Image 1: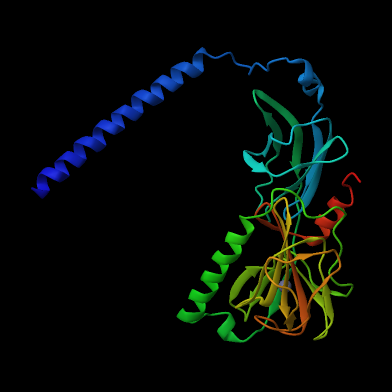
Image 2: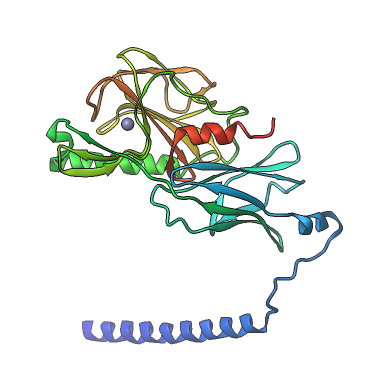
Length: 310
Ligand SMILES: [Zn+2]
């Protein structure tokens, strides 16, 4: 009986394989029938799209750049950069989007395309420049470097919670103005430092640390909605704000959290107080910024956002 089921499954699998092959072949044949250049239908309202000169922008690993393209674009359209869809908004007859580059960039150039109905227009060419990062050595409680099974499970679970939040950003921006620093204080560890914990474990610091005594007020970098306000293993008491458009800011190692999940906070709202909770050697603020799922340097988001049209 079981043998027959296996045999049946095998036959089905083989036949679907051959079906696929025929479908692939048909697709290939259809492709070759198409003209080389994609034909864009010229309707009265969108002919101007064809005159767009792609904006040339540069970006470095772990940074953000602004796309700012004049024109009356449709909000129902899609924008893709290197085949990844990125959120955008329209302001002052311009298309505005934040392009982010991973810390682990391959430095390959790419382009951004505007897709609407049968239009496919190149709106930007992105050049990725090199960047070097310093190293630092850190000693912390070994329990927070080499994790017990229980702590590892907790850290893994918390990473999933954070990723789920990052995947659920508001499509429209909550903010109107440029991003601001959450605290004015000495930077004690920059974004991208290569860290060696207790001479053994190597990681990258994908945030910026600011010196801050316990109890110092920490401000929201921009208007947004509190996505998470929890006690995490690595970052201790943490607030994560969704600013919409795939942009999140994280405030870690707090001694106190003063906002609730789901709350809308204005720019500069005191969202918590500095501390040294989680994996921390001394009281400080860890400020993290995530744009389109990539952890980037906060300063570059501030600089890019200052160039938004008013
Ligand atoms: Zn940090």
